[in-house]
Image 1: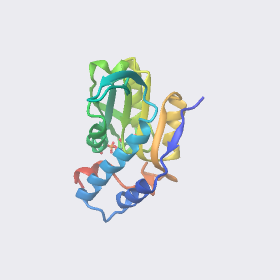
Image 2: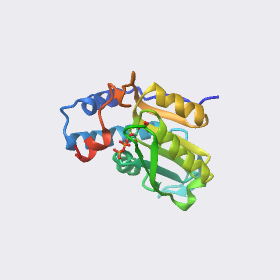
Image 3: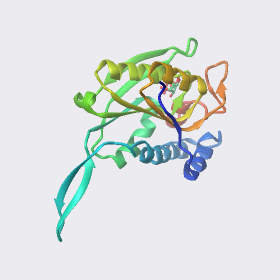
Length: 209
Ligand code: PRP
């Protein structure tokens, strides 16, 4: 069994991804557009969240309504994942946010954890791991390893651009985790960068290069 790979095929996402990929796009537009795509993706990613029935009294009568049955926790992988958080919490204002800091060694491409802070209720929650880039998949795999070690069972990964190598790694190591991407690109180059990708997302988001 391997987790589902869902590529979100939507004209607005395609249009915004064109701007994100363009090397001429500066920090302000890049940051804003990453957030917009994350919001559009969140709408689809949360489609199957469990709901429970209850009733509320309207000014006119009693209405049967459906509300989220479980807490939602968003877990950005630092740094680039931060660019996807605020727009998702706009859609799900009750969501809690955990942070996992992982950097990729530029030479070995191995993930190194430097920070982890998760909400206490995380094991009961629907967890969305967010990181715009799925390259070798090492960082996302590591984040999911941490979450599972805390007893989390309901995990989805949401990213902008993925490489086939990263998708394979997550599908093999965590076959229960669904992978949502805005685009699946061709390959990794010899430096572990996604081709054609969008460059270094963290640097473009925060203007550090
Ligand atoms: C980049 C990117 C992902 C990771 C993807 O982060 O934002 O987190 O690499 O690579 P992988 O799939 O091979 O693990 P980076 O390590 O550059 O850190 P940053 O977000 O702080 O810039």
